[in-house]
Image (tube, rainbow, N blue to C red):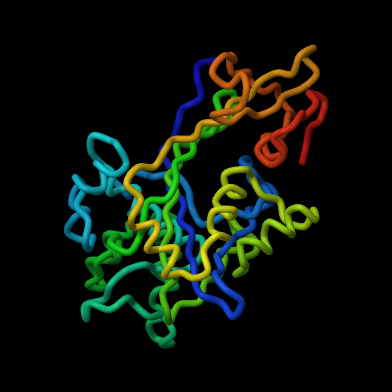
Length: 294
């Protein structure tokens, strides 16, 4: 078997100011999902061909492909990651980060607009139409200027699926109420980052390690303004690629992160069938070879 394809992906953290401080929107993945099923995540997924439309700049406000690509450290096509983040937010959460013909962020709290965009959401979700087509029909420009590159995670070698994921952060728009699609994701909520981490420690919230690290960073900020100002000022985002290693004696696996002892010296292991990737990415400590399922 050859190496697992590394698929480009985008994830977006939608934030707002709640009564007790900064909140972030999270979704619970379908229990039957092949990758991290049941975990609480941010909206996101693979960058697909529709996101790589040749005329993206015409429907994107405030960021060119050259600027986006330079920020991500890729030769070209960087703007597609911002578009994918917006599309996934629209598909999975019903939140559309876009400016209307009047230049303001679109509102979906009008009944007519709400039902129309609900139809658009279904079309985009099932691949019947592209998001750029919706933009052309509605006179929209995607609000990429308000979406900031935040972190970069690569799924470890040896995993059954691998993603090269760029994390972004943006303010949730007013006049839109996020709601999970009840297909890929089965529950949703606004939560303070510290509360999400506490619920994870209590065994109520399954989180994979990149999500935990993101929440730990978010909890340092008191407000959306403070967070977004800091995100806008980031000049360089390091790439974090965990490594799966076999424990001595061959009895199981664990995850190493850059900076951990032995990270630069190990040969990444290939997971045996039945070893749950969820548990490795959640716990990082030893997971037995015989431990299968969820």
